[in-house]
Image (cartoon, rainbow, N blue to C red; front, top):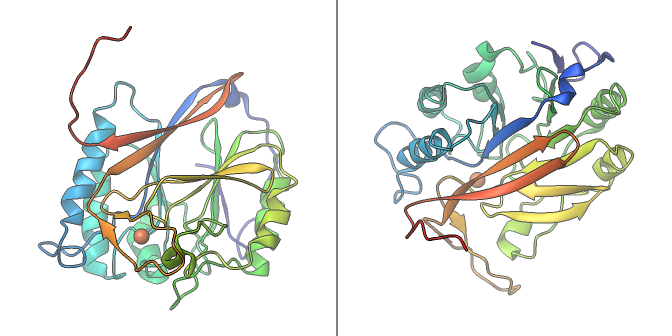
Length: 287
Ligand SMILES: [Fe+2]
C-alpha cells in the first residue's frame, strides 16, 4: 500500500505509474449516519438498514467497483457503538474502501475505528493520499472539532500543496466532506465550508485533479470550481429538501437515495453517474 499521510508524517514521493493505463470504477457513498444497533436516525429512519441497501445496490451492479469512497458522516453522534456497526456494515462490501470524516463524526473515535485499514495518520487531521490505484485519491479532513462548518488549516493546505506537487500527471480525485461553495439552500449554507479561497488557490494549479468529491448536503450537486468540478453525493439515508427561499425552514425526507459511480477510462476521461436506490418500473424496450 502506498500512502502519504498528513503533515506530521512522511512527505509525498514522485513515482512512475504504469497502472494509469488501466480503467477504474469508483463507487461513492456518503452520509450514512449509522446509529447504534436498534436505534433510528433522528428517531424516525433506519439508517443502518439504508446503508445495507446502498451496499447491496453497489454489489448488484453489472460491473463491480474497484474501490468505494465514503465522504463523511459515517455515524450520527461519533459514538464507538455506532462505529462498530459502521465497520461491520462496510466490511460486508468485500471491496477496498476509503473513508473521510464529516461533521457528525468524532475525529479520534473515527481514527480508532478505521486504524487497522492502514491509511489514516496516527495523529492530527485525517488527511491522506492513496496511490495504489490507477486514480490517485486524496482524502481531506475538513472537520472542525465541536463545530459543523468546514475548514482546512494552513498546515493541511501546505500538505495538500506538496502532495499534489509530487504528481502532476496521474488522474486524481480529492475528497472532503464539506462542499467548498454555498449551494443556495439556506439551512445548509449555514454549515458550509467557510473561506474556500485558500483551498481553491491550491487546487487551481492542478490540471490532473479530475473531480472534488463531497457529501454533507445530502443531495447530488455539481459546480465548476478551482479549475475542476465539485460533485456532491446524495446521502444513503435522507435527502435534504431542495428549498431555495432565504427564509426556508430546515427539512428532509427519506429519499430519494442514491450512490455515485465515477468511471475512469484512459483516453476518455472521468465520467460520473448518479444511481438511485429503489425499485422502478421497467425495463422497457430501448429504441
Ligand atoms: Fe450528513
